[in-house]
Length: 191
Image (cartoon, rainbow, N blue to C red; front, side, top):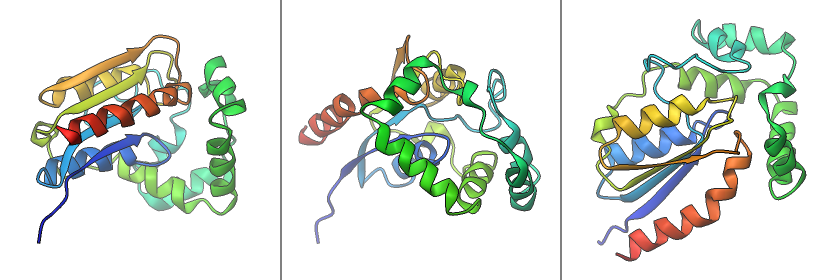
C-alpha cells in the first residue's frame, strides 16, 4: 500500500490549526511533505508569548483549565480593537464567510473556544525542532490577536523555515496569502 504525502496549512488562535499542522509535520514527516502557518501562536513557553495581545483574557483564564476558561467566556465581551482596519476590510470582503462562521460557532456554545485556548496554553507535545519538512511561516506585523513576535519565534525555532512578514496585515487580513501559499505547497508536492 502506498501512502500519499500532503501539505498542511493553518491559521491560528480560534482554531489551533497552526499548532496542529506543525505537529503533523513533526510527527508524520513521511506523510506531510510541507507545512505553512499563518498568524499562528508560538508555544506558550516562548518568552514573548503574552506581549502585545489586545485581548488575552481567555488565554490567561485557560492557563487555569477548561472550567476557568468557560467561566471567563460566560461574561466576556468581544474586543473589536483586536482587529485592525485591514482585518475589518477582509471580513467585509473576501473573508466574510470566516466572520459568519466564527459568529455561528460562538453562538453554538463556549466549549470550542475554551478547548482551543486550553490547547494553546498547554505543552504541544513535540519540539519545533522536530519539524524537518519545508515550512513557511507568515505573520502580519499589525496582528493584535497573535502578535508578530509569535511568527518570528516559530520561524526561528523550526529548522529551514521560511518567514514572511506582511507589513500592513492584521490577524485576518494576512489570510490573503492563502491562495499563493496553497500554490507553493502544491509546487513542493510536485517536487
